[in-house]
Structures are given as structure tokens and as C-alpha cells.
Length: 325
Picture 1 (spheres, rainbow, N blue to C red):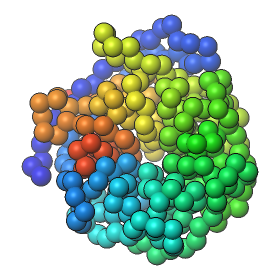
Picture 2: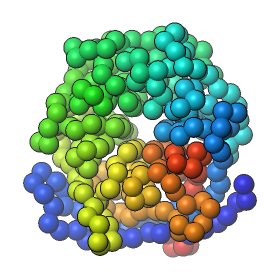
Picture 3: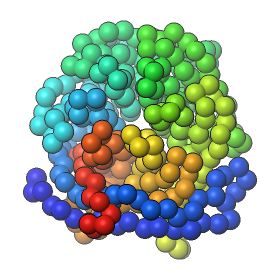
Picture 4: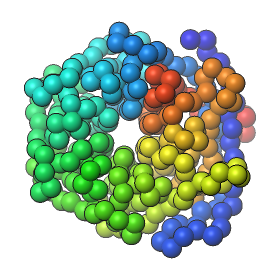
């Protein structure tokens, strides 16, 4: 694809009138803005094609892994999108999936996939060799009801969010149970269909609380630290920190929090405590504009990858120094 260099929208806001328990953001300066650098993908079943991809995550070596949701597989690529390999199909056996909505790559390169349709977590090598699985359907510790996403902490622990059980579970790398928190509700530490989880370099755990339209953050053991976010009301331009469809959350190496908003078609950027820094998107008339972005991932070099689900493609953006915009 032609390598457009488009300057993206970057907006700053000073926000007031936030609800109880939220952090009141104040405008800050971003060190970088983001320019479109490329993308790949189209609708289909072939190599490098997707059916509503829901996650694109970057491994420690820069390899990009994609949860190809309705092809029931994982594909992986070079940082610029050259196809490297794939694994998976629909089913209940080892390396088969009943649902592929998320994935995460550990510091050692292993790939963890929350197999939501089979209520289990599967673990693979970097090139898709099956290494183990754990979990079953249920509500007890170590059981799952629609585990939709997960992330791997710097120490190798696994955090899983359950869309159906409205909670977070924590495990060791081999699946030994470590802890649990959450219940259905709107209060601190409660969730309504949590859809994504991200762990910061310092161990802070961020949860995209979809139906509550907020991001909550916790200590590694589940201690509530704070939250931000509220619903965007049509009729006025979105203010900073307002969401329409909050689908993804990711923590960059510098600690900033990126959130994908599938309804507004943009990626929001926050400080670690929720101060609003800005957003990026693309003009609707451009071919590269977003259509239901479900996930965002930031590579070690700062490149941002977006799972542009409705367009069945991955798009990526490179940081540009703010003074050069």
C-alpha cells in the first residue's frame, strides 16, 4: 500500500464535571503525534486476509500477531505486514478455537489466546506450536465464562478478563491460579462486560469496562486505584475522555494509555492516571479512515498498530516529534 504521510488529528481538552470516583484530567503536552505509515489486509480467508480481526499485538521482536476472529485463527507478520505464518481453525482440540477475540505476547515470545468459545486459555510458541491450556466453563476460580481478552505482565503473570463473569483473574504463566476480583455493577471494581485488559510496565492493571464506558485501573492484586471515562452524547463534538464504544486498552512502553473507540473511529491517548492527552484518527473521505477500530498496540519503537475490524485490516502509525508536526 502506498506509504501516505498524513498528519493526524491531535486535540487537547481541559475537562470538568467528572463523576464520582473519576480522575479529573487536565490538558498535557504529548511528546509525539502520529503519522500514517502503512497497512495491510482485506476481507477473506487467504493468507494476510481477515474476517473482522479483533486484536493486533506486537511481540518483543516486533512480530505482529493478529486475532483473525471469524477465521478462527492467529496470523503473524513482519512489522510492515509481510505474512510469516498462521495457526488455528474452528474446533475444541489443541490449537483449535471456539472464539478468537484476543491474544497477548509474553516477554519470552510465547503467545496466549483466550479461547472464548471453549472457555479456556491456550498457550503457544512464537510460531504456533501448542504448549498447554487451562480452564473450563463455570464461575469458580480458574473457570471462565467468555474469557474475551488477556494480557501478560512484565513478570510473566497472566491477567484474563471475562466478558460473561464480569471479573478479572490472575494466573502464573503455566495457568496456576493467583487471584480474582470483580462483579457485575457500576461501582469501583465492578464491571459490565469488561472487554480488554492491559498491564503497565509498573504492574498497574487497566480494564476497559465496556458497558460502563470507563477505564478502571488497579494494583497487581486488584486493589482499586481509580477510573475515568463517560458516555459521549450526540449533538456535540466529543470531549476528551468521552467514549461511544470502548473496545480496547493498551499501555505503551512509556506508560501512556491508548484506548480504541470503535464508535467514534479514533484512538484516545491518556496519561497513566487518566489525564487526556489527545486522539488520532483520519478524515472520513480517506481510504485509510477507521471503521470500527477494536484494538491498539504500541511496539517498543513507538509504532502504533490498530486492528481496524470493520475494514478487515491492520493499520500502523509512526510517532513524529510534536515540534515537527
